Amino acid sequence: MSSNRYHQHFTVSWDQLHRDVRELCHRLVERDFKGIVAITRGGLIPAALIARELNVRLIDTVCIKSYDHMDQGGLDVMKGVDHDGEGWLLVDDLVDTGKTARKVREMLPRAHFVTVYAKPEGKPLVDQYLTEVAQDCWIQFPWDMGVAYVEPLADQVKR
Image (cartoon, rainbow, N blue to C red):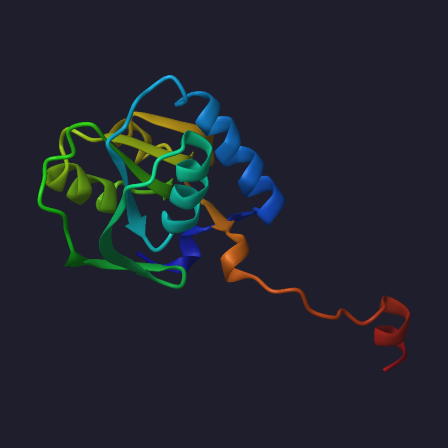
């Protein structure tokens, strides 16, 4: 799947991500989880924030690679877990096409699966999500961005 399928961009700041994860936690706070399984790498930061808000101390990871920058390729499962997810919260930043979600659902069929953001193709695979985003929208997460100097327009025009 190629990067030319994206026609919109949605930039998520650290503050916005934190607010969104806290809002998701408001919907989860009444539940009791044995632990959290984060889907790496995107699920690591949301999982850490959720663990803090829900006071969960046991955190594990499922390590799957499916993207190379904006291009989605094959799935490479680098690490799984040794249970079916019963009583566990499974966390990722985003469910996109559902490719990774399907694989993780096979591995942890009894986990409660949440994402912060969901696209139409993948959202039926998660139990809860906070914000729906268009399928053709690329989400720019804060860990993929940096702050850089931008020259004033007046100075750019002078050149």
